[in-house]
Image 1 (spheres, rainbow, N blue to C red):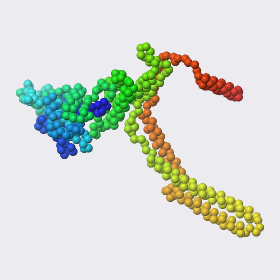
Image 2: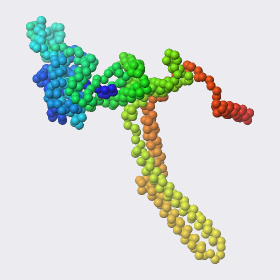
Image 3: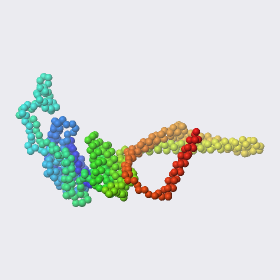
Image 4: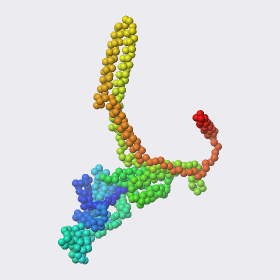
Length: 513
């Protein structure tokens, strides 16, 4: 497993070992089941489940009883060339050889045949060679809940008879039979998980022929961060995706830093100071909080970015006798926390429907506007003709011209009436009573569109961290030098502008008085 890659091995807690064993080995429920293996009879898992549940109930612990554990081992694709039964037996037998416990395993491919993997279920408890039986040294009394009580009186009813569900185990009788030894606490430790990664890395690499497929366990002491695997139907899938995004952003920034000449030791120190220590303090104070760890990563990425900028700045600078950089002017570096991925903000509000509605109403209004402009043009033409008619009526012998003007005016009146009817019909054809209703609908649609666009603007700004900078003050004055003619002219020009500005202010003050 290389830097920044998902782990090829997972350890999973099983609250229902019998169901899980049946599930991984059932050909009807697995599309690509190549082989199964077990070193115990199927009833073994029923006995293990029952005893674990009884012990859990007696302990009074809250939560779910863990009946067994499971290793999920991702295999390089090329291992499919081996005999499936032999391959599975090899990986399973090696685990049994190391821990001497019961196992049930299966070799699978996913539906797309892109993920060859082994499910290896194992018991955390070894079985006794001979069942352990505990003999009652005196009469033992149990109430209807199976709880041991001190005296017989505590299980009697008002008539002095034993209540239903209560029981007595007489002296000399077996009151408890144990088939299994206590759980091996090693299986609960992080050390076990890490050891399994190295153990199965070596086993896999022995079988892999292509050097490119050989695995390497992630080095937790490196400056990089490992990403986490997202299991099928994981309810925290989106949370892990965001977490992986930021981890990858950090790893990209580490690559940049290495290219700029930052040493591995320096990067490990930055990682410890900005990620490891703050994360540990956060967990101790408030427990594991995904949002807080996310914030720590965002800030760490920003600070590493600023550190890279610092390295670029001083690379070609001056240094004192001890090798410390001489800072002759203030330095300012961008350490703004990294933004979250787009997916963290949810889906961007869509304005497609609102835009379509505004465009539809806008087209109706445009048609109405054109109809109104046509009415206005007809009215102007009619007024002009009526004016001409009045002038003609004042004259003699212009009967023909007068008649022509009267006909034109009558035509314009008809045309005007038709255009007015057209204007009134446009809203009705679109389902509105009149022009005013169209205007109201348009105004409401525009308001709704503006509301959605406001939400879009808020979405666009969501998750964008506030700008932050790392400023290093100069510790050495800049060497003095003779100013150029251009610089002196610019300085003179600025002085003149300042004097003119002051004079204008004084003049304005006198005018006000």
